Amino acid sequence: MPLTQVSGGGLANDSVSAAKIATGAVTAADLENNVALNGNPTTTTQTAGNNSTRIATTAFVTTAVGNKDSITNGTSNVTVTSNAQTTITANNVEAAEFGTAEVVFNDTGADRDFRVESDDNANMLFVDGGEDRVGIGTSSPGAPLDVFASTGTYFKGGSDHVDRQLLISSSTTTNAGDTHTFRAPSSTGEIAFTTDSTERMRIHSSGQVGMGTNGTGTGGSSVDVTVRMTPATSGYGLYASNFSSGTTATPGGYGVYGHMGGTPPSGSAHYGLYGKVDTHSSRSSGGLLAYSINNSIYSILGYWSTAAYYGMYSNGSVYASGGFSSSDSRLKDIVSDGIGTGILDKVCKLQAKRFTWKDNTQQRRSCEDVLIGLLAQDVQTDFPEVVASVHQPKITGVNPETLNEQLGDNLAIDYGKLVPVLVEALKEAKTRIETLEAEVAALKSN
Image (cartoon, rainbow, N blue to C red; front, side):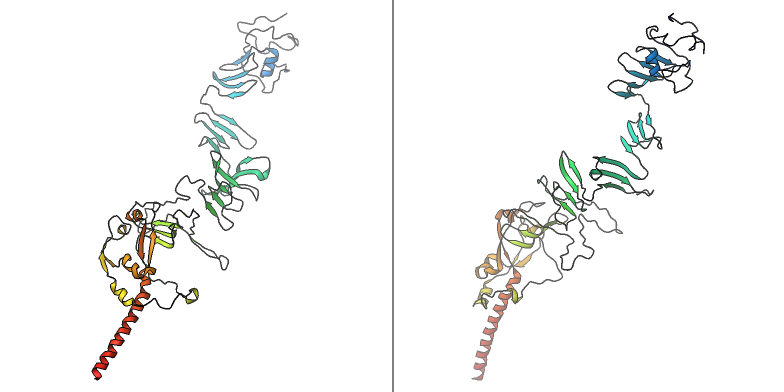
């Protein structure tokens, strides 16, 4: 006889047993709508085959009640719907939803945490519902993703091959300054950094670092860091800036500091800072461009003006405690002895000038004093060897165009090279003096 309705006070505890309802006597067709279960199951391991007086599992409900029923306990319930979806509700708020295509936890967006516990970690996975953060190994994530491990490797990514993985690990100490290591396990492994699918930096297995090199060589085995503009999207391959606000007790700051230490191989050149350019010969270039504090004075080391080479090219004065010019006879091919005759008369034609540099000149940027000198055009007439025509293109950097660049080619005097001219002039003067002395002596003897 089917059980059609139980109402009123319901059935007392233990009043219905297996002896009273035969197996298979109650089916889904015999029960309508919901079956409300008051109280809690006596155990947590009941299955659909249990003969207990309590019902605890969805499997049992599905078998005995059907696909349109629910189990309710106060404000919490389990519902099995016709589309094979199971919903678990706690405190009248949906907690989990099990469907055929997905499983969703906290679909309503309640301020409710989610935690997965492992054998030795109570917070193997922790979702902070109130802060919208995920923690691995921590119940208080401080970022959208917070991975915590006291020591050892806490991140591993890549393929199943150990040599193709990236590991991130922390040191085994407990100091505040622990080291975090990015590691490619293979001895030939490399780590690359990209933006928009374009490689920007690579750490090679040799320890070399390349930036802007597109993964190509880093400049040779003797170079630790290579920076390359490829393509030239800015004016700098490397830009270094140091805003130092030191006191009198601290040293000044350096934008770039070069230091060569250790004991390099014998015979090798040692440089604290090395600069070189490889550009088209139609463009002026230099190994190093340096400006003064107010951008008025510049100096270029290793300069090519498109017309001549210079060890140093500058619009300012040069101060040194001493200096030498190479003059070894073994390095010279002598074209002629002496530089001609009448040198004294030619020197005497030169006229020294007091002058100042014009306002719109490179020289005026560094010197406003009244100076003494010669005019290059006057010197060039008789002594062209000590005068040079210098091509002056606009210098890249903080350098407004001046009269020098507008003229293009400027004449310059190497005053040091006038010394041999003056030596020859003194020799001629000495000869004249000796001749006059002899004539005077002859007159006196008569």
